[in-house]
Length: 177
Image (spheres, rainbow, N blue to C red):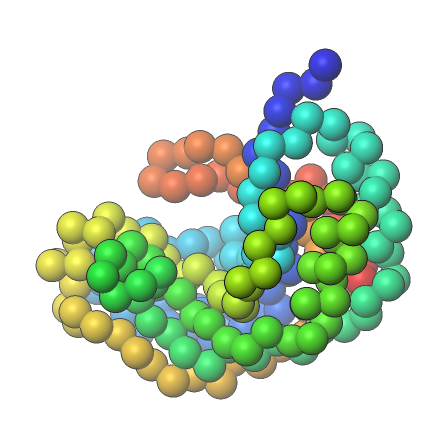
């Protein structure tokens, strides 16, 4: 039996949005945070789970090829997250495109997900920090309106492994939607 691996499904972040993230990093360069590197930026579609049959999963994901097409994503707010009571990251959020909802339903069916959560919203984690570090932030509150737009057509199967300073991600498969 194959060892269980912690995997999740995410959309590739468009280059236009990566450019906006780079500008934001420059703006907040003095914040005591761990910025997410370009190669690790992703828009989570299905949260992590432990997978024990990777070859079967890869085969199922092949069925998605060409089924969705290009997805327009828009992020409109940069803020601390996941909430104001216990902030531990900087992220950007936005409305959920219908195509992402459609993709999630397809994935639920293809992967036979039983613990599917409907409370999904589009977000992109930009930086992480320890909750106690909020005291050291130059700003105790961030709420910046942005208009970050881009188009993506690639779903990623990503493995998450524990790393120093946060998870290490490895892309196991790219699927053109």
